[in-house]
Length: 352
Image 1 (spheres, rainbow, N blue to C red):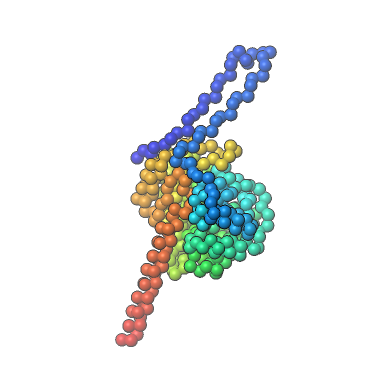
Image 2: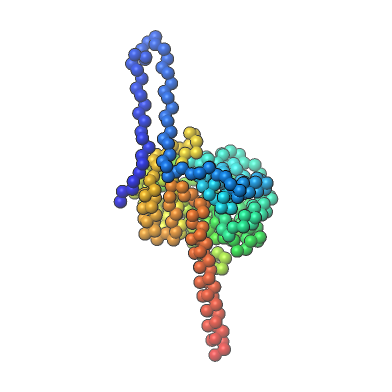
């Protein structure tokens, strides 16, 4: 199957004029900087604004909270904030890793804010949403990678609003599964960890400490150890995301999907990579919307529970919230009915 791609037009570097390179000639003028290819129309969004957008912005600023919407320059910030929700980024706005696709600042982070679990939970409850996504920077400077702090944020949120569904987008905790276990035990309903790209491109796209196999191991642990540990005895869902437009091939994307299914990943999202600044990796190609639709079909045929695929889809995008919310609630009701039926059988047997 061929997927339509809008290629980034190659720019040839002009050869220097021979008349200007001989002895005694003036120094050659610097070559013009390669122009950035304009975004195709399907990637253009309205500027954020409006009453609810401003309310969310002021509320988060007042509680000294970070959001991935702002720090990662998410193109959907207007849609989500105007809808009354945001993806809160825990543990500060400085990451200890330097992935070449990411707009979040890299450096030495400050100490954790002990009030953040309470402030984050307070902000989410004030939004009045029934599904929220929490994420974080990498904190390799901390012994547990910040897992306990992250888990406390989830616990506090569940304490204040027990019925809310919480999706968390976690780092790899340097491959230490004790950190992943802490997140599972916190009560998160969906746990995401992004593989980001294909095996071949991982070293070029991600920080050297983030390996392809390590990410697969995290997702495998979530799937295996999260069975029956969600509220109501349902399974915790494992989720990941893949960026397209980084020079990956169709075969490589298929291989990645096979690897994800082999570790039991439930949910996958596809989105277009967009260059945050000239310092970051360039976009190799802008993928047409029709190609995203076809990748969604491929992933569904492979058995993924849910697939969100589109140029502007991001791992924490709201597109999948409604489906996942309905799926989890349906699983809880089925589990509750099953338990009730078993109890009735036991009661009937005892009476006989």
